[in-house]
Length: 287
Image (cartoon, rainbow, N blue to C red; front, side, top):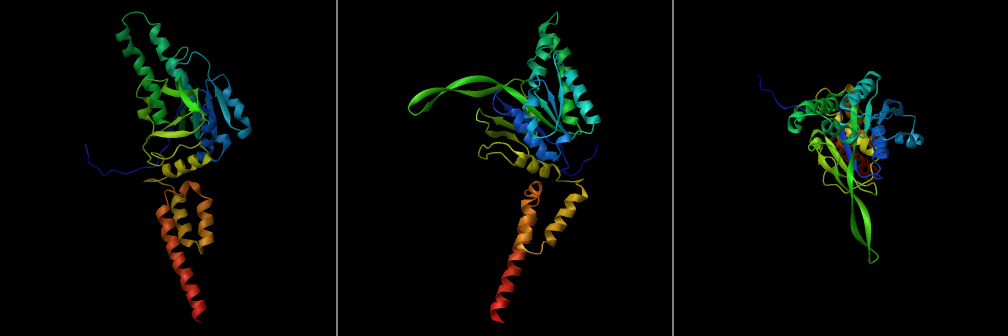
């Protein structure tokens, strides 16, 4: 046993998008995935939704891998392993609800087992746990979508009570959301709110439609910490070498993935350049 100082290392994101049908889980996942890797060919959608991922082929030439029933944990494990071996950078599991509540999923397997129901959980739980560990230990970024049980609430619109579809509890084993770095809840209007956020980047922020920008921000967070590549170090040098405010602004606008991780460096360099600019103007008017 050995004590050591806590140290944040480079990470792969574990992102969960949860919402009812029609909330834009697949579409949002693809946009965030492209922000994470900037290469459609490095993205794969593991599709359990009857080829629904093909509906967004206009976005880019990404990969799909269809899984049909039975939706056993082992089939998901096989898909993740295949993606890793194929050089994929972002795996979208769309959706993981089938592993729990689909044909051949955990609940289906358990319901068809003979004998004591309580004792049978000790046989199926390890299979589900292996599925969770495959997500946590993958060398790829993982984005998982989870269906929400649908319900309707009455909302007031122009003085009339109109039923509106809302997302409720996610269709997966209780506690799965704790395993993810970040969980977004999507509403029927496709707006996302962070309900769990270990990155502290999105919690308590106004609900927004997810885009490539969120992916780039997450990539910047993933690249922080010990073991960061020389690319991050080189970017710090680039900030210090910016010769004017316009050059610094251009560097900031074109590198969304570093805006948060290098905010302090951008601010410091801005102050230096502003001071230099003020000094030049002063010299012009006094000579």
